[in-house]
Image (cartoon, rainbow, N blue to C red; front, side, top):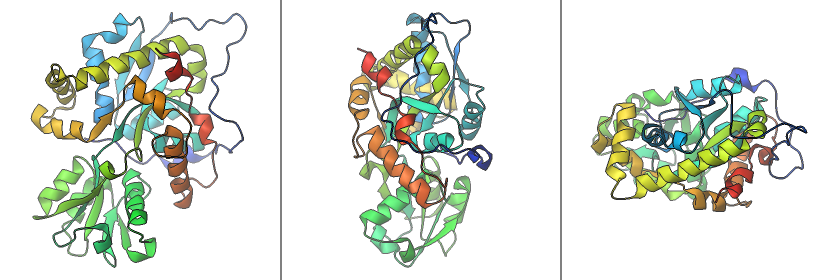
Length: 341
């Protein structure tokens, strides 16, 4: 169900070189070119199975995008397929973690993050066997995870918080969807996974429990909307309207009067019982327009999309996700968010 997957290594051919530019500048249109809301074809956005992105289904079913005067075609993908489609310029925008957007950039495709839908607030977790009650208890033991993915980042962060190093544990690599079965091995003490795979791991080993989650590190994992920079230059007004519709979606989810209906719409999109889906909503901290205005202020801390992305960039370099530093600032813009009232 839940999102994250590794990008195909094939998209990592060309590498963005780092520069001294600040925030990404949306290129100005040529003299005489319009940035009107009128468009000969709809804006195409790839979205996939994660609560922060499935939430767009509320706007789709309520007709809010059409009401806002913007023609948008949301296309449903498996997560990795959506990234490949975006990299191949088959869609105009994609829902993506800020870390994976850096990987796309390292591959040569300039996707500019214009807003964040949410941050993970518990949907990513480290699940441990009985008798292991903290990250410190993992010293000298084996942990299974999928190297290079977002929960490798989470585990690395948890280790740093516990003042442990990579030498203190043994890491075994496994595909995320196979980790619940790997967890049953007597040699594996813990797994780093996202929901609902984490729940599957918990069911597979009686007495197991979550000892660390993304709830303990707000802002480590942001989920965003990244737009092809060339497309964005021509469609600023439409993107302002899309961002404003998102603000309406978050309000609908957060309002007790409409929350149940929002969850029903989202759960139906992915074929899950609404009561079961509710737990994934609680592990997702949705970000409205005002949250985004704060998030897109430059800072080195995790409460800034910049600071979080700098942190992930270092992880990506340290673990050879890509081998040359990139211009992180060039993949983020605050122009759209700050233009919306």
